[in-house]
Image (cartoon, rainbow, N blue to C red; front, side, top):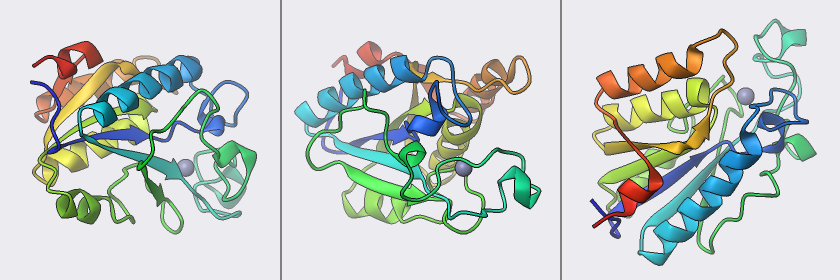
Length: 191
Ligand code: ZN
């Protein structure tokens, strides 16, 4: 399959608040950050584009529990929790896409210019990983497919929140039946 300049890597929400010590942690968050660092370096080396989404809420966001939402306060704009995890190293030229400033947005495509940026670069195929498999990654993959991108999900660079046991497995199943190809990074890089 390989990686060309028509490929983009989309790193979903690898931020402190989604990693151990954060507000809504994924247990494997740091390992996912390291895996995404490797993936980003490999894509950049092969001429692929690298995008990183960042959940980016104003304080008092409707998704927060005090406002009646489902989540504790997390990824508040400008806070340490909203910063990328220190184990995530992004190559030069990485495009940062911030989302969730107004409405609730699990997907990198909602309330952002991600689709326009991908189209402007002539991207036809995306590979997605990051946090969390059962929220941000799932919704980004579904929207990438709906927007017509050939979509790969990196099974070794993703971690689930599992608010309900099995959520992560169900998310992988949903991505697959919607047309995503589930592959490891090594498989995605193979020519
Ligand atoms: Zn959020």
